[in-house]
Image 1: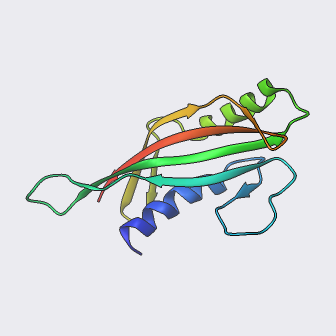
Image 2 (image 1 turned 180 degrees about the vertical axis):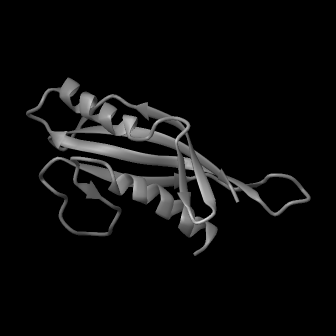
Length: 131
């Protein structure tokens, strides 16, 4: 598999292990689930050469996991559940896929906001690898 493929696979394996939440990956069209779920987005930054003599690149980005909850729950309940998602990606965690190691560099729970009669609570997980 390619470096990019291994990077995505390592992150998505950890997402798949997230307990108690239905996971929705990006897709075009289709109905959005009505039940509580986690929407996944991967935002990759530009790759940078580590140094001029090597071909290894620093690859950074964010995994954005948005908890989508019914509006009839309180905002604080959605934010508590987002905290559980954040804890699943502790800073310093190393994910591996083949020989690639991906380091979790940050995790931030944002405030829940009302969107289309639901709470949407994003969790931003920063990652990086050198390959």
